[in-house]
Length: 269
Image 1 (cartoon, rainbow, N blue to C red):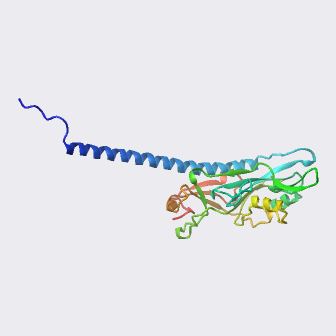
Image 2 (image 1 turned 45 degrees about the horizontal axis):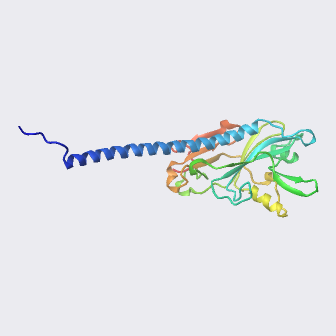
Image 3 (image 1 turned 135 degrees about the vertical axis):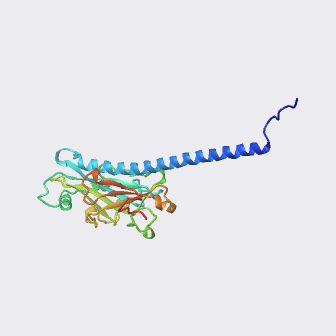
């Protein structure tokens, strides 16, 4: 009797290895894409939640003290593109941005508009402090936050749907969310003129005479589009997300996510 052939030929082994390798690569690519998509979603939702929290802190009226020094929180100033951090040191990650609390006195605004009323009540993100020896210094008021987007995400400027006009760089400017002292009406505005708050403080401490009036800048009542680049690379331009704050937004419901296939998308083609 003839004995049956044992084992596999080299061709059979090669075919098995090719099929196994293809299956492994397919699974690995699927897992990698799933992880990338999850990171993208996390980055976008994390930024949107940051903005929602800012609105919640502005609309939730809070006092900061008692007696003659009683003050109230009137808003949030969010700056993008500052060169110094809260410690006065050079920013090491260009994606980092900051949120400052706008605090002012409690009083009557005499029917004035929001900006005029806040000026009357000495609202600002910086305050002058005098110690027991009569020496003056400046410091930030209220709670100030440093924010670094997740997974190397970069917040970039809008480009009105024109890919050729897109700027793949960190956004520079300021978003101001403020509440009228009497009516409670919330106003959202934007300024391309960045005030480097932390640099201002360092300059004042060195004895320089500079203005710290944040309301003197060119703030506009406009739609604000934040282009969320979840890789921080120009190659990701077609996969950016548009987080929009609608014109006249008064609370967190004015924050929208505009996908790249939606009408009015402002972050590429």
